[in-house]
Structure formats: C-alpha cells, structure tokens
Image (cartoon, rainbow, N blue to C red; front, side, top):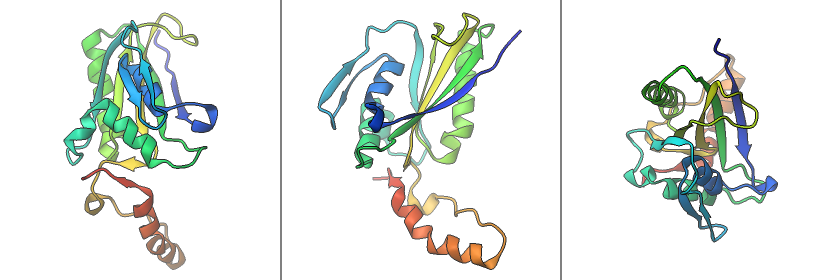
Length: 186
C-alpha cells in the first residue's frame, strides 16, 4: 500500500545553511558558493537518479546552470537571517519505475513551481532517507525564495480581495511587490 509524504523546509542562513551547498548535495554535483567562497563537492554521492533545472520559457538561458541559479539566489538575499531557498520533499511510491518517477516529478514541478514563474531544481533519489521506509523514493525540488524568472511585464497582478480599501492597499503595494522580486530577465 502506498503512503504519501510531503514536507517543505527552508534553507536558512541563520541555521548555517547555504542554497548552493543544499543544491550540490541534492544534485550530486560539485558547486562553488561565491558568497562563502567555498566548494561543495558531492560528485561522488550515490543514489541520485536524476537532477535538472526546470524554468519558465521566459527565463534567461544562463539560469539553466545550477551554479548560476543558486549563486543568484544567494546574492539576492542580503540579510544574515535570509531564506534564499525552500525545498519540497515528496515521497514517491517505490512501485513506480524510473521513467514514471521522472515523468511525475517533471509534471509536478512544471505545474506547481515553473507554472508560477519560478525556476526549480528537481531531482529524484533512489535510496531511502532516515525518516522513510525502503518502500519510498525521495523527490526533492528546491526553488529560490524571492526570485521569479518571469519578466516584470509578464507577472500576474496581485490578488485583490473584495472591498475598496483592499483594492487601494493592493495598488499602493504593487511597486513594493515588484521591487521584492528579483528580475531574472537580463
């Protein structure tokens, strides 16, 4: 019988974490964190079935590179207690084969992250983690916390609730919203 698990966690600087280090570990790659001037080499890590960057069509091609994407996410955040990235962990049924898991991960990320204008690193690991039984495969999706790969003129308008006061407040804060999102279009 299949069981399901969904966890969201933050990659927080105040906890001593780095988005670049987390991406290197999850993708099984060697990446350099420019902010910390540190190399994170997980190229020898076993169990990573696949890792790839999925981004909206409007995203610059340079953000298809893992190191460029995660260093940009780190550079976007200036505070020492910043949250440069978030991670979504899903348990996939072990009964699915590799192609089915990859298709499921790609479809989920395309709809829920890339479809919302966010670049995302998606991957699948074929080994159980500490909190999972061997009947599961882990799917990790990392995405920058405050970045959007959608150019400003393509962003959706902020949601407005009913009432004139709410409309005025949304309009007044629209420039603040645009300033808080990193434009990856150039």
